Image 1 (cartoon, rainbow, N blue to C red):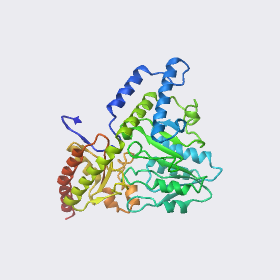
Image 2: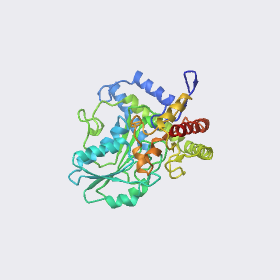
Image 3: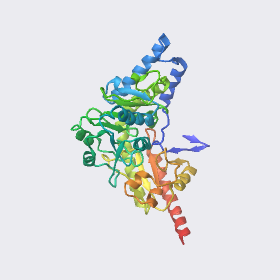
Image 4: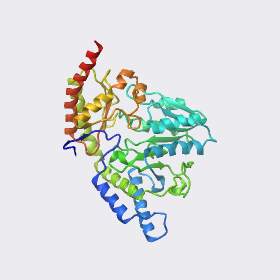
Length: 394
């Protein structure tokens, strides 16, 4: 990729990924030729409706789900809001207690804070130094008022994989407690099995795996009732009203199809590149902290998080940007807020350590050379920044 005459190394796929050219092509075709409203009764509307039906089947297939268990949304944030508020309002007669963790994405964490203001009781589970929830802590937190447990699959800042299967197994003993998983950072990249893992609701977003922005989905296990966030036309089984984004939905399905082909092979390659990168960084840089679980089974191969204590992440990010390399400081939803990462603090890092963290996130179009170049830049830049800080303290 070229920008301003020079090569660009894009390693901020956790914020958004580059839309695949094949996705753009099918979306362009739909916008040109299949522009009708799928709710319309005429033939053009029927054709658009069939495209949506086909897309729903493709998304459902990757989750081994039924097509009518997939509800399309505007993205991961809406899917998370729909899952949490939809359950909270629909099942409040059972109780008003939800369980989540201290390291959830803002679109879960802030929803829980809002529900607290409205009278719900929320338990925020702590995590260990790797950023992992203890399944036993989930079990201890359940009361006779609990209606929902919401734990993300892959943490968006450090990449740690949560013990979703173990938590799901525990919740089998609590049939009145629903289990929601925010899979925005894992869907399309890592295997996930809602039925086998006893997941009731699962959120995903197209632009995290080279699909379009503005479209996502919520898997809702058959038989679950949700109170809708949006009412009006009754689209999506009355769960999510609003004219369907047909080009986006078709683009999402195309991205799913492409991800299905690349998922396993790419994950293995990226993991090897990641290990080589970490080996070099730890060998050639002093005072660097590797955050999260970087083992093959414990963390997403696509996410890296490094802390450089006493440095400021935004300074590192901008130095790298000046060299054509793009990374981020934390979640894109909170990266412009100048305070330590809530996730890293929950993992036990000090504010000085958390303020000096950068997030490196890869995609299907990332290469081994991208990471090697980033390593070159960090090995060059970080000692100079550390020396500057040391000089300022004198």
